[in-house]
Image (cartoon, rainbow, N blue to C red; front, side):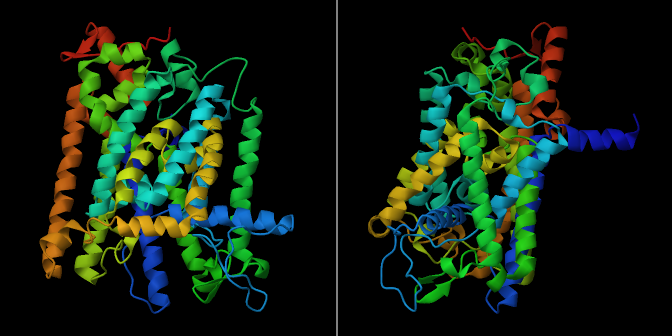
Length: 521
């Protein structure tokens, strides 16, 4: 095999390391921020550095599905309020119809990876109880995003590196919710399904503790819910893309006295914006799908990595797959997350210092600290574990054809309704429970000095860079794998390396025990 062929096989046919997946998603963030930067300048507005956010766009896309349904069947829109002006209805609820191009891109990215690897994940089987839990998890997670002012992408991948105070609070309670969910579900026989990714070659050719989703006579496709979820997802994307490209007049709304088109991306932002933000979503989706990277894995590994090293037999008895215990012990999800932080924040610091373009996430209640961050954080952590994936993982998993995600995504649409149907009451609750008005830690430290704020953020970047290499060293100590392997090998390759060394060295590597097969009795 030639070196060129080997390179192509490595980066297109097989899964990637979490480190390179994190780098890829960081690059996607930079492309997205440049797209918004250029669009703001072209519109004569002050640009700011805003990483990818998806929950508001998701609400707009769900709203588009609602409106289309009402128009198709000539039904009244139960979210409308106010009087129509010149035949155009006033907008109601929290969202007007719209589109999030990064969401569409991440779904496409997941689908592209399934084509590259020639393996859709529609073969992955989940029993009814897992699907029910995923559906409920989707509802819980979706509602949590509304209370917390964003999903795990917003807080853990954007807010933490940008030193947003409300994100630190949210992530703390997210960790509590995730730990609670992991404990409860592992006690109900769900532990064998806790995996970052499913690949047929590994899952179906391994011990029973790894193979819960691989059955000879049952697949995801054989369940009618697969097709229901697939149709729902296709309608979700198709309606939003149609609205975003063609802006049908029948879907125009008056919002705050201004006419708002469905999507409005082309009319007000142009093709360049669409191409960059869609492209960022595709690149980010490829990075996620090529590794199974997600935010909830990072939190769980940070919490449980040391415990799984010390009490491997206990987690094996619970049924946690061996590869999952290796994943947690190695801190690979945190390595991927921190690699993303370093790339994204490096660009933000550079742009703020050199071009004086400031970070975003200021100027609104949703970016301040309220009781919603506490409650919503717990719901985000709990819902992500029940989904076996956070929101951004859900998009790429839809593209890859995971049954439980297709079902859980329908739960997302239900979880938004309590917020949209009681929008005014939720706004009142959040505003009345405001705890910290300041948006960012560096604003607390240097409230009057922009130079001081830039310095704090630059020093924070150095802390995160150090933290990345610290996590690699800690993961190597916990597993016995080499640091180079944690940088460059995918999780299955790391697991196989550990197993092979363990066999040669009597069940341990440098005194570190090799994870035992899971007990699936």
